[in-house]
Image (cartoon, rainbow, N blue to C red; front, side, top):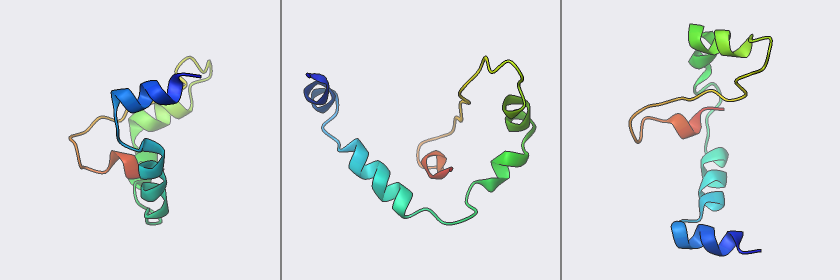
Length: 68
């Protein structure tokens, strides 16, 4: 399987390791505000499931990765 080599070539960063570090350092309650947003509630209650993902945009370093 060439996937690990291709990913390493595209970006030498250890994404899985970094993701685990971020998960380990999350604080309870961070980002819970998003669950009350109209955009989230509308997406979450879609009956047909046609949008399985929600896009959270923001400037680099504002904390998107820390949302649970």
